[in-house]
Image 1 (tube, helix red, strand yellow):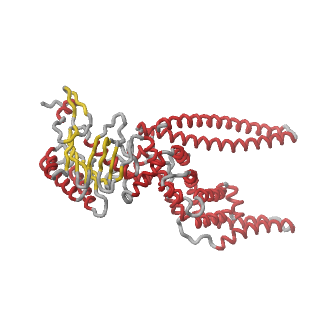
Image 2: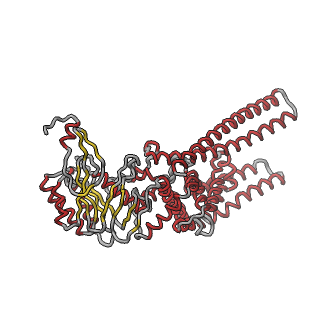
Image 3: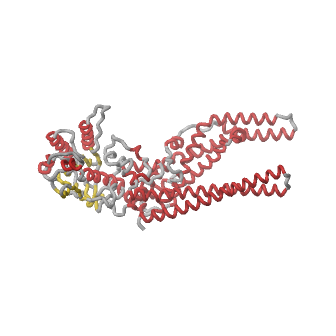
Length: 603
């Protein structure tokens, strides 16, 4: 079964499940209303008509049935939320395959940075981006981990780390049920991606714990209240003494609670995110992975001696008890007497001492698996894409290389060959013929390869590289920066990255290089930039309209190869086949395009 059929079957099944649960929930809701009305009628009969013992029994049965329906209703609503989350998993899978960007969440815009070496130029983040094409995460840690993989922030040692990622992505591509379970567990609260930073800050906080006096009071005050009230009643002491005992206990309890408010509120608000992640962690703990990287990540969830899901469940129970304080009667009377907050604080501190240091590991393991699951889904959705062969030496070679953001029925693949460091392509061609798209296709596929994902090609072999681009240039009136000067700064950054030693060579992608100056200076400047980059061991591609730059092919003895795109003309009609050809373009279409849009230019 291919990915589209899998998603369509899942959507139909989950849609039917959601509809059935909604109908059941409405039926139960109607039953609750009827029982409530019946209870009120019985109560009125007992009060006004003085009905006998049978009415009391009926009232008790009605109330018991109402409580039972409340519990059942809650479970049905919870099941409906899970089914709705599963439905979103299948709907978003279909939306990604159809490139229906409007039907997908756009939460990666916060990762867009003009200062990053390539992500903005290559549309890695934002709407209609690589991230949106790949992302199936439901948590902030998972999304941030995926963003790091797609921005080369943690390249790791080549090719060991990337090979491990490839194996994990292959493993997860064949586990659609696991990926659905993971997304469903995380997607119950649709749209909410809790920030783990406050939780980590609380879990890793170092303090002295509770004062010894509070621990003593936690047991002394409730005992004193029980003993005092019992003694007062047994000895028939003066009336009101038991009231004073209770008031004194409440005052002591409230004073103790005020000292613990910050910690208790912090733990209570953080638990909501942890509860959501527990189900995802349980799904990982239950899965029997084959890939070594996934096995290690699962083992991190039990490295503390107890499974992470068990520890998180323990935290949920503590916070469940703690949240009883939100009831006003309990919080102002019963809780202080029992020193409830102190007991809860002591339990939280014991939990933090036992498990707090491991929370970061748990979240990192969850984030890694969730990010790799997104890439696994991407591989499942694009079976024609290939995992590139990982070469130890710097190179980028691919057959049928295309841009994954272009629909299958419109995409044209081309062969690209940069066989070693110090090599470059000079791409010429008419306007709109595909030069910029080729450069972006090269960059995007290298991004995917470094993340461990398959690439949009029929075959590929790639080595270690760091991407640096100069494509989208923004001037700034506010800062007094012209378009040309802004491009010079971008080019300087690319050269600086290429000059760094001890790191992988730079893969440079320069679109319409130095087009903000005159033709003579553009040729001189562009040739100087390319020569400098190649001398530093970089490799890449440059697109240009200026044919003077193509002289580099002869000047550098084959280190530079000229390739081009061209348009097809029939009468006054133009079309493009987007096929990359060797050599230098022999035509131009600027005047023809001007006439096509209604600008009268003499031939």
